[in-house]
Image (cartoon, rainbow, N blue to C red; front, side, top):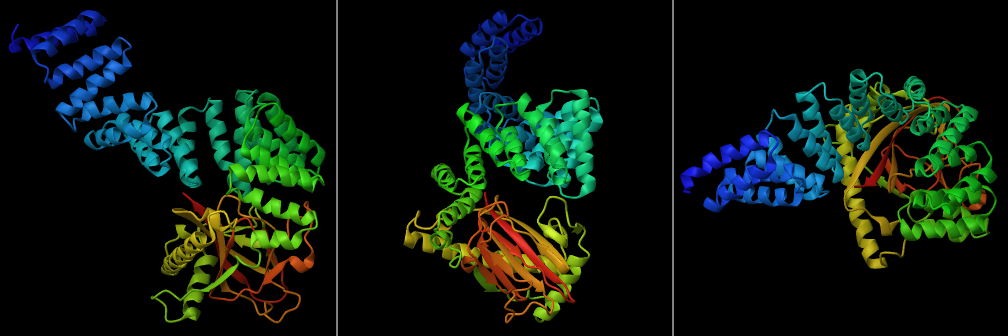
Length: 546
């Protein structure tokens, strides 16, 4: 044979493969490679034949040889990236599939697989771009819409996630999973209309699939926010009966029992799951919180300390361990450990360059907040009482809002730099707040607008590391010389269901317009109501590690 016969061999191999005969096809490919070991076409076809025979490793090796001979080839990039992804090597697959997606802009498979590799690697923004391209190229591809909804959900971009889930549901209206996926996303919202729709979606999923544990669980979450605790508990119990080893399901029932005041049953729910081997730091932490609410602070401390050994940045564990310490008569030590008087920082922000002074800036910013596109009255399930809350403040890109964002980010970056320097000086584990300083972060920013008797109830920010509040407009009733602290922000007071701190150990701070307060997200805090004219308009944020 001569090299001129290589194309004939490859044509014969392809014909055999098309007829379902991979053995002669393989023999012809190997003969062709003997004659032309640098033939890109031979290696590409050989990879296909090997995959047809179930030899994934050999197919991967053949594709790698083809790639080396013709780097940048779109088809090879797609096939090799797909093999790597199927083998669980998403990190190696991602650049290959990125090449395929760029080189094959009309190929939905390339975009979809790129999105899958990015999702597996935790880059949900890149994943969303891949799935969005796949869904745009093939609008009838239900899984592309499903995965796009999941990626946006992980980014907490719920409007985009819900829109994608609606498209998936439109394509498969009889699929219980599609109704459930939309219910799960809607359960993250706080307005009654969305929550009621979420409940209907969960109920429809259960009509289509009565034993759907996830649908029961999401019905429980939605009913909790809608203020129906008995129905929420009933659904949570059914979910646990159907999925007794699912961590989220165990926690949904445990939390509902705590909210319903049945602390003994909550302790038992967590303890039984842990004893059965359904172990996770989340369940261990929740068990500790249940013990604390059940009047067992010593046992709670032991459980929470164990959690923090595994998850040192668990904000709920930190907050509740402080309460457990105080419940054992060590409130002063608890306040010192939490940094109650050490880690609340007041920073003055300069007005953005577009404004002559704070007065002009705050007037524009307050007006933007009052007419914000996501402004909602007392959203269900949140801490606002008799107050408006915006969703994502940064969704409205006005001059005042973008100017505030720039000033906020500059202040945060400077603060993080100081924290890193302090942590390096004090030692990584010397301070429960400084030991968790993030290297990269994401921000969620929202605004609160409250009038007379409006306030924010006790809460923490469990999914972030640093939280803060900036004061835009304050009523005359909020005064630095007010012994009653009307309208002030208070730190340290835990939920009413927990053991309470001595009043002398709490900290109250009088807000000032133009001042940014920064504090650890684990710190219990609330705003106190006031009476009189005027509004209290503030901007809050959460900073979470990426």
